[in-house]
Image (cartoon, rainbow, N blue to C red):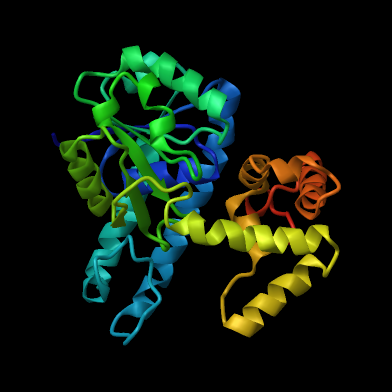
Length: 317
């Protein structure tokens, strides 16, 4: 089956990036939101992504001929493709992708023609279950359904999808136009065909497909990243050091470009809070991680949700 029409359910920080990247690579994209309010919150995110892509392309001529350019890897297959002609083509592609995005609140209408549906709703198991139950009767017979869940396993929801063999995980990192990884994780009854189609789709949208051989909570990325962020939050909750010193210690000591709290701002506090709450220890406000969760929730109440809102642990232009 050839994928042409893609519906992204949810347009949060990562959902909006996913939808835009897919549209940029020539697919017809519909974003579904629960309400008009949800749709209106998506639109500024997508406008910002359009600006980011435009700025990337404005800077791209500087990469021509460079030995080791730090270019957006989902835009070009390799550095040999970075030419003035291709950059000008992509500027037009960018504007057409933005103008072509469609928005719907009617779920049946949003998915009726979809070859692929990407679920990006909140990391709350009950909400995902209810969404799948509602979605199942509206999908066409050969449609593939994937989840972008960061921590939850597809086998936990397969019975609610109405298409176990066509359901799997397709997980992206933030800033996907540069950090162009797509983790593909099947469950025990996902078909080989569906896995192969999704793997090819990931390649078609400029991603490197990392195919997992078995289910793993957190995939590869978050299996490594989760303990790292958790360690930072525990240090912060225990008041061992301030967040900025924790970040700087890590960056200077390891040469890494970002510390744990900069990463939390990039991911967004809402997602981090939902993930942290899955740990029983975090529900006890006397534990180090529980104390950190209280601080995160206090920030969220003030609207300090990270880069998307202009301020989290740090301020952003």
